[in-house]
Length: 222
Image 1 (cartoon, rainbow, N blue to C red):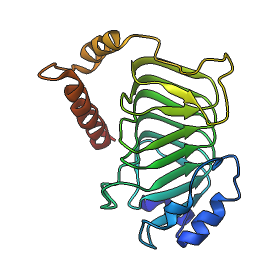
Image 2: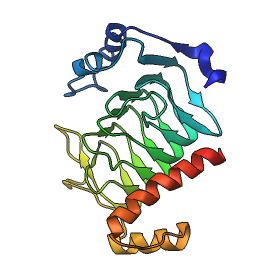
Image 3: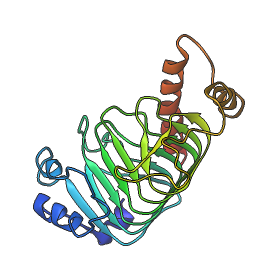
Image 4: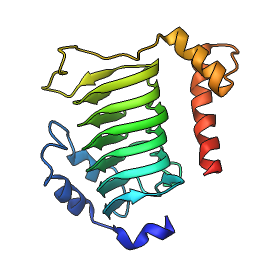
């Protein structure tokens, strides 16, 4: 992150919320006041512009606004670097594109444009929120315990999970949920063939463990 510091500001919690309140559509029907209640006062950053790298983006604070597009090989919203167990928020005003994406436990993640994840979208985190005001496109979606709220076109090839419309909206074709194009069983075969997934014990636990280790490995490569 050292190469990007010139475009970061460190707002107070109230300034962070004040910036969000300028974007009515982004925070529609979201309870954002809690963002300023449960994090230390120095746990907020705002990035002015597009955030682009060939490697990994991972933050050392739990509350982030990017006033532009985001593009990376890996976008990790994990709180590991900040030291927080759960919670926090991530808001991107534009489009987000990456090969690998991971949310975090209890994190409020909102994308004002479209979300394109070329390989694995890992959103299987309790109490988390992932809202996308544009399209959602991914090769593999992993979120059997939660879901994604989206407004635009949904294209999910493999995975376990689904998308629902944003609150107060409906999908263009009237569907209430949109699932991956391939079944859960076919998706597991895809992981075995393309990512050398090895079954052992409970398959759901195996895939959860695989998601963590695969994304960590991709972080190290980038």
